[in-house]
Length: 68
Image 1 (cartoon, rainbow, N blue to C red):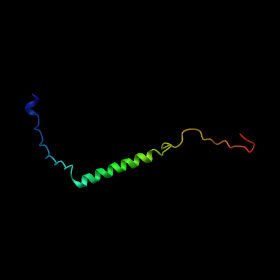
Image 2: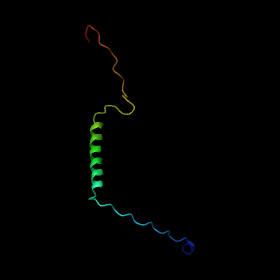
Image 3: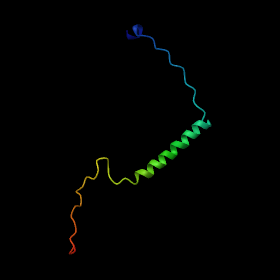
Image 4: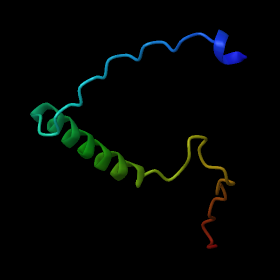
């Protein structure tokens, strides 16, 4: 008997128009996003440690004047 007393469905919101892919503003934004991703990828390759720094033991042994 649930169908007889259930509330009615609310109206769906109006559909938003889909932007045109040939819009110059969209093309420019997409191009800038691709360039930024390339730059970020290039910078990531130079990082040698994580956010917490070096996790291993530091090499602090100093060399003597007599060799090894």
